[in-house]
Length: 254
Image (cartoon, rainbow, N blue to C red; front, side, top):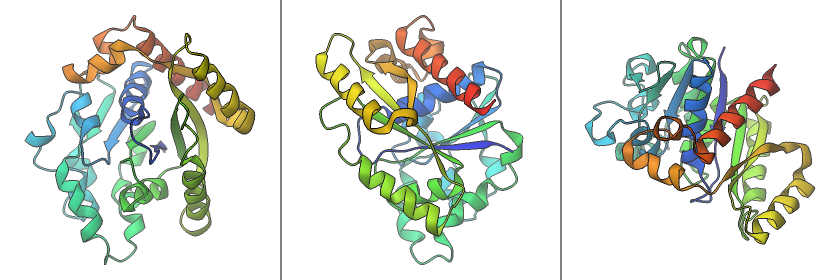
């Protein structure tokens, strides 16, 4: 049975999709059969592994509405062990169309039934909001990974996200656990990055990953080439950091 990890933070620009793409690629490079599931209508995780969101005929949107089985949505990527279920702007309509649906919060969980035993890890890239798409991801997941930018307003909104998690644990998914908080865009030359890191570790201690993701030009460049960082420049600090994160997560499981 797959370990399903939702990668979520309602604050945009914190490295959420960068984390989803590069962690998925790093797990695949570690010979873990991995699925990257794009739940963001922007489709950036889809394009980040070389698939044009505007060229795919069926996406996770169709699975949420029950129009197609998730197995038929699986696409290959440049990494042998990494598969993709894509998204595109059509997904915007899903939140509206699911409002009146029975058990609307469980649509993704139901869609993944039947393919979750084919993977070691399923990583879900959530949109930057706490709407129905994110709630579906958290209801389907075993774990939540929260990317948190090393900037002044880093903790803004984190309490709201954790409150939502507690609500989902109580009402929809008692098995949901916080896998960890990932510090992103860390700049070792910047005193503020160190201050934010220390503050978050003081407040959340064991819930914070040891690995920190540095601010790195190669990580920013890789999506424009449709490649995870480890295929764009495996020697870059960003690619190496995500490989370290994958190793840390695998160690946690063991």
